Length: 136
Image: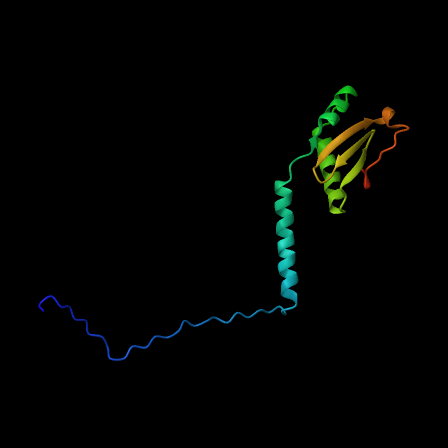
């Protein structure tokens, strides 16, 4: 057989298994889960804050604002967002926000203003189906 190819190998071949690196930690094993949970919690909160939409207004709230000629500035919207964030931090779902001469009922979970009531219209009103109030 003229086409045979021969390869000469050493008579003894040793294959070593890969070496595993030993990971050591200065923290105790009990502290690591807390650190991981804290890191995850911080990352999750950061992502939620980035993804959280701005405050929305329901059609009802928009009609109330228009009928009562209430105009909200950018700083007012920032204050409302901050109040919603604080209410959410306390676990609120539906909240009454009292800001200057304005009362807003807000769905905290949806970040949506449900209705708006100005100062003169606020007197004598009873706000129901809320679980918290935030004084802005």
